[in-house]
Amino acid sequence: MTERVTNARPRNQLGQPATNTPAETIARLREKVTKNHGGANRERIQAQISVEIASKVQKPQRKAS
Image (cartoon, rainbow, N blue to C red; front, side, top):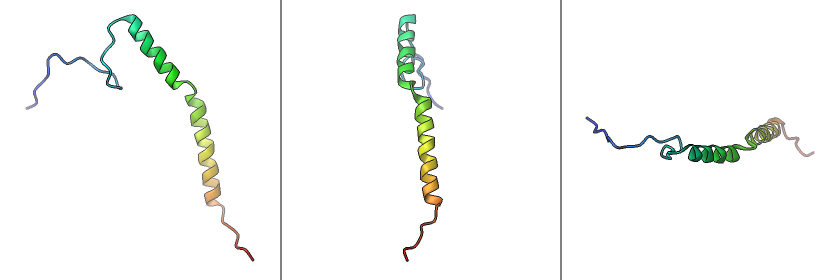
């Protein structure tokens, strides 16, 4: 059997304890927004890079005469 810890606080996905005040919640949400800012552009650019790499790999190289 596993023992259950009775005084364990819930944690978020990052392992941080739950917020205690609305101000703390807002601060965390703002922090999350700033970290995620530009994510769509990063994904788009990474997709373009992947396409470029894939197209270079697929093209057969010509032999020198």
